[in-house]
Length: 175
Length: 132
Image (cartoon, rainbow over all chains, first blue to last red; front, side):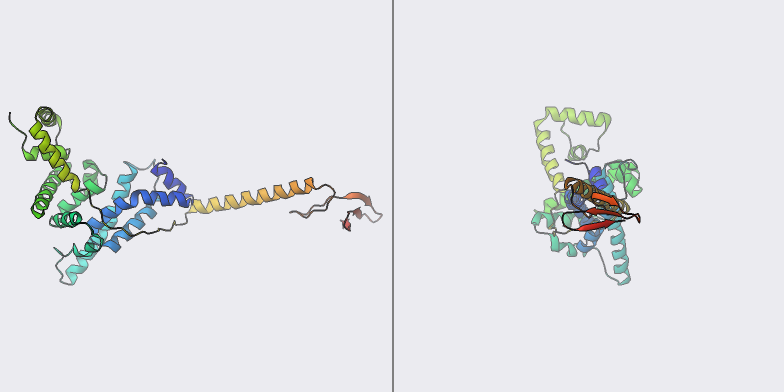
């Protein structure tokens, strides 16, 4: 199997099959991360596409950490930017986002399990939810999450513990 | 035997325990079937948090043209021209005696004769060709 970095190099040289293979390999996970952070399917799609374009500028030598974590970092930042923009827009319109962020995601939820998961996740505040999303979908370890969010490592660990505990309790109550 | 509480099991599942605390928890799990069962159940629950499967539409992202892809295109074009030229010269050498047009122009002269005015005249099977 060709490595991610080899695929990026080949895609940079115009190899369409390498490009498609890279997307096929990483898009599902990155879409999940972007959907859960932004709460908006079209915005998530834009963030993921932009992520792949930006990845063309990276090389293995200058990158700390894995390719998967790098891709997760880029898409997280883009999806976060979109969420902040949407929150600002909603605030200007006097629209309460809490509890309403789940609705655009309904279009992509087919399984009851996913509905319960999304409901449990969006019952958390963003500071706890993002840590959980990065841990489970960003392929980041705790120190990478700390660096990405600017939080102390101890805070990241306590937030992931709280977030998982609360989600688990909520999902248990729903079933 | 004192069992591990749920918080400790959860921290273990999330890889939040370190050092002595982790070693003691693992040691207890190795000996306690009840805690192992509770741990397995808890691990199953936490794994569900990473089991989001949204419906994703099929999409194609176009590959942007990069500078290195442009350079590679030029190299490939130059290589094709070179192969074409070499192929043309090869073909003209193979068909001895025929006049063949390749890039640049070349022609196989038969019985060339230098005329008084400096012109070179040759013959071919098909037609009379004058080469300057």
